[in-house]
Length: 262
Length: 283
Image (cartoon, rainbow over all chains, first blue to last red; front, side, top):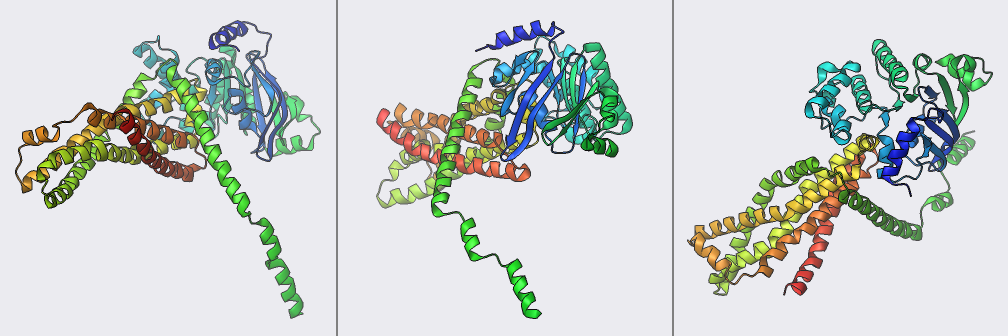
């Protein structure tokens, strides 16, 4: 069985190999009780690429992200992060993989007993212990400034709006300089200007850090802005995947209806 | 027309009694469901304990969180535990004085009070008080974190939630229960002496000397340190109930209630076993 050190070393080697996709999901199936949520979903995302996953509410988009980060186990199928199959890994082994993944939850999931600054500092305190307190503080300020929250350092999550919580959640997701980002509705609840700022940040990460991203969103405009490819889920399957221009030409009735209503 | 309409209404609104009987679970199904639920709960508890143990004994250790929990469990429970100990001491003092007077054994009062508080009432009362205060607090806190995905966020940040949340709280309960028990005992003895002195003056020095005369290791340390087992039970049950919560606000309330009820029940059952164990091992 691979040890934690083996996985960490393999991560470093594979990140230098540009040919392997950063995320590769094959034939994922997931059922909750009698409800089939994912029915053989396959997709992949390369380094520096952003894939937007769209679909109706309740079609398993968030479940897909949770399976990729290891918070849910699939009934069958594989999830490869930098060519490492993560299905069935123990918690501590999965921890090494998660250090390179930033995850933004749909409702931000901030720690409500910590201030905003402490929330963003949380991953740094646990995984960058070599940083001094000053360095950590500087890094937290930089991250909050990137998401436009630099003036709210000492506030508690309950003191800020849902959209602002989402921005702090994104700052926390970026704390460890991840090379994979999983974003669940990053612009939901944000005004158009803030949404644009978040989109610009995702694009910047994609270009400067070659971050591979999967963005779950209902916002087709945002998806077209930030994503290289789009994937449309319906009834647990990927109905269509590709560039927006190609998807627009599809004759599939569901795709046409979805694009028409967006 | 009216008769037909009534018949039609009856067909729509009255399910046949035979169908109702088919839908109701049988007694056998209910019993097997209960048995399954019982083993399912204990099975999941066992898995949870193993995960926490593995996480707790492997580095990196969460010292800062442990210290924070020692404060939460220990120093914040101290006033309540001391107050309860004081009340117990007064009650035992009044009851013992009356009973011992009837048998002409008033001189046995200090020994009786020390024995009752230190060996019997102090530990179990501390365990039940802490079950209520700490058990509900931990259960509700972790349940709230579970339903708002904060525990998932901890895991997604590559931090082991069993190590950060559960192991620290359980260890804090284990370490703090004996200390809280000593505080409860001290408070009980002090107030018991005070209640007695109001009726029949007795110097504190004489009270302590008489009360602990002939006291041995077996009479003091084992009953006090058996509360480490209570701490293990309270911390484990509360963390387990909290971290597996489902169902929003209702689930949080249920987790808090179940944490208190189950922790209190298991503390009482453990006391029965531990008293017998102490009597056998430390005669």
